[in-house]
Length: 151
Image (cartoon, rainbow, N blue to C red):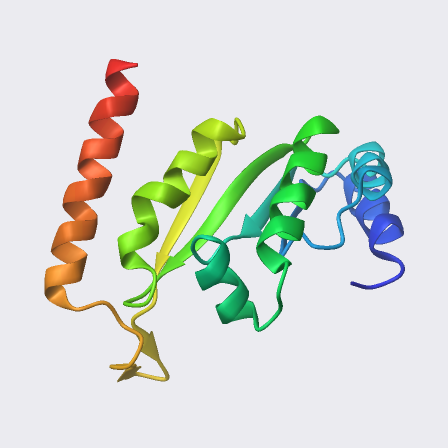
């Protein structure tokens, strides 16, 4: 992360811009979360690639999942709106329900889901979800939304 991120955020907010950060969350300590909240950052989205084993494997860093969630909680506790950013692919599609459970468990109000499909016009067959996986994922997401409407 740039050393002047807080100053850049402060400046952008002073010019009337809405500032949000998209991050892996691992560097958002309580102190840093407070500093970006005071700078006027209105949203922090943290990329979560699955549950702990999957996320850490994707990030090639043991402990990245726990530190990312800790950063997310620190931002939330500093009063910043937070969200989980999840890029679905064939290696983590089955973990979607468990990842969305994190929203409830940690009181995270936003969820951004991206489907990993193309890059430069080519289909990434090794990572793109299959049609069957997407059908399952869509059904699971519909069930999740129906459950949230009931509760």
